[in-house]
Length: 390
Image 1 (cartoon, rainbow, N blue to C red):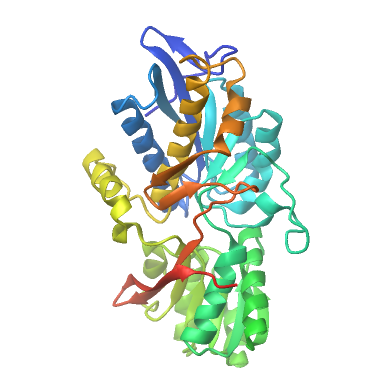
Image 2 (cartoon, rainbow, N blue to C red):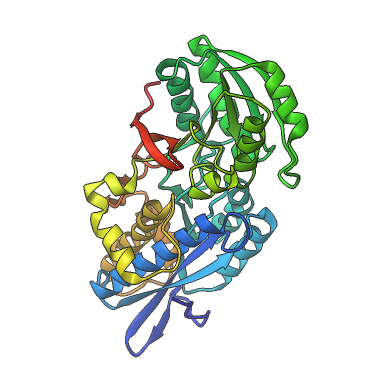
């Protein structure tokens, strides 16, 4: 679906003979190395808009989608946020994928009272402030997410590595970006609390896929597990190079690794590696059966990937917030729709594709479930699902 343009008036939506058009914005990496995830986000939002329109979920309102490519760049993300704010028909935005991109967008949306719901950001500071470990403080009232955070994901991985796998020593590697650094920090804290030992730590340059120096250090450390903070375009080749150098310890990472492309980029050397991801595998959920069938029937050329279900639920939460605002205004989109949608979002609650969908006082998802996956016979397989017992 394409955008309806920016001919909306004060109402924050555009009117036509068929009623009012409301646009849901999407920001994600639609090209480049992370496009497999970004396109899954876009199409899942498009599906939610289609279902809302087919069901006449909000009488008198037609939903359309405006998707912008941030190329995983904070600068591009900020420009996209400004463009989405300028389109008065946009009453909510799904995205972005990357926590670092989100940091560049939050103030833009906050200043315009435009709600943003990320299906994938996991850095805790986005909702709970930079001092979240000692003093949680919500900084942006317009920001929400359907994914759980690294404050839960990192420790969940540490518990699995230490307790379930019996790994007592770890070597840490990150890509120096917001997501990767935060994830490694959360893993390290829990792993050492459990009694584990960190044998060393290093960083990679995401633009240089020759990891020989890091591999040499990791091999010399002799740790039981290599924990990586970052995404699959780098972690796949890293795993490949570690294994070829004779490192037998598995590579373990977060949701940024959990994609079939990780296995491809590891050149068949990913077997035995691990990754956590938010929620439970969509295919295993009764609540997701209709989503999976509808997505297939829609004929999208790209899979919904790791965040499809969370993207659909993020878009549906915007639909539900708009529905509440319209219902409270006699069936019409009010002149201050954006601000009212932000208020309504904090009260949204429904049974979604990924389970219970709702938000706490920080805008974080109430669904705290996580899953550990392992690469087995060249494909990701579920190792364990549950919640972090902190």
